[in-house]
Length: 186
Image (cartoon, rainbow, N blue to C red; front, top):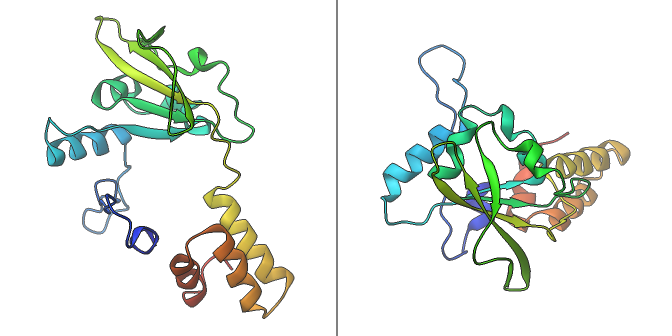
């Protein structure tokens, strides 16, 4: 579905760096963001800009992530606001060992999007840029897409055109068609 969503979009490519690791007959091994960033850094090289974008809902749980304090030093974090998840209290969500300082360049607006700039500092004094996007309260999520498509199908039994219309309003048309043709989210 990701390939379908970015088809024809310049500058986008699908990466399998975060794909589940399956060894033999065992269940997939856990994927950790720190491992994904290491893979991406190795494949992109040191001169390529790499950022880690996450929603505020994910950031609020960052403290519990595997090797969380290392993440911002591997790739600067960009945290986008989410509906119902204000960006207040971020200091309380920082991984142990990191502190937040204002960035010398301060806040700015990029292409009409407000960007608040900070520095994250670890115990040894290493610094990493940290950015907040406070005005991106986009009212859409994967859970909402599944819920909308699933409830539409359940609420109007056999009305596939309505379910497809709901999907097309939330995702690119090719993705909506894939969802319909594969009977997903019933």
